[in-house]
Length: 313
Image 1 (cartoon, helix red, strand yellow):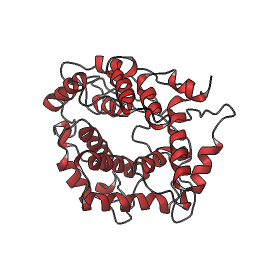
Image 2 (cartoon, helix red, strand yellow):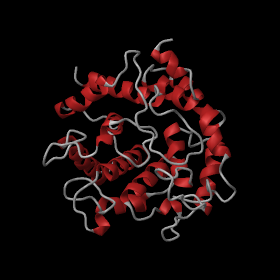
Image 3 (cartoon, one colour):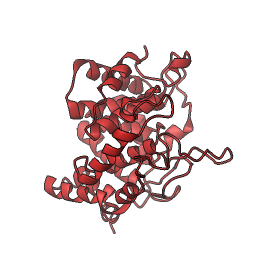
């Protein structure tokens, strides 16, 4: 079995992206496979778990059941994290199952923070960046959140959820979440000078730091940034950053050479990449096993390398 065959022998959420990003199959074939996300496998399973209240696990950011203080990580079963997954799976936003799910969220779900409606966002830029990505993807109006994020960009070019507590330096985690949201906003609503300029400043923030290093010392402050994960949740890692640059059609830059080398060096002898970091916490169901070959990581690594090679020829 080739690596491509192995990737295709999987869930519709992976297959349609392999067909689009690696095989360049006709748009109609890709769309047909993508439509199956709502009716088969992981996507259908998640949709079936939504409650009449519009929630998953009874809560918006956290489940209704209190967190176990002794459990590792954080729970990933509540509404927000489930919507993040449905977008990453590529659930067709125009399909009837998606529309039903999103209508329930819009009409019934609010944030624990101050009872704001879900698509009005809350206060942390990392969370709000994800809500922008989800909202625009599913056709909801999140312009108010976008306007707020533009005012919260820090002087060094990124964002930080701790800015409200006085931090003046950006966070890789917050910045990648906002970047993905602003890119989705422009993809759906069209580019504007303000949003494009904000994205470019934040992209430069990552590039100046070679996608994983401190600007001041050159050290890697968190070794997990060099360990590839899926789902990434709200966490940054170098592959996530590269996949954003690919999606944004950023022209490859020599400052990426080191991190592209990191991706290449992690390819196994069989042509596959491992799931290195599963971000512990309660989940609806396991997608893959940490330490084992990962279809998600392999798909994302292959399309990143294709983008980099094609852009440097």
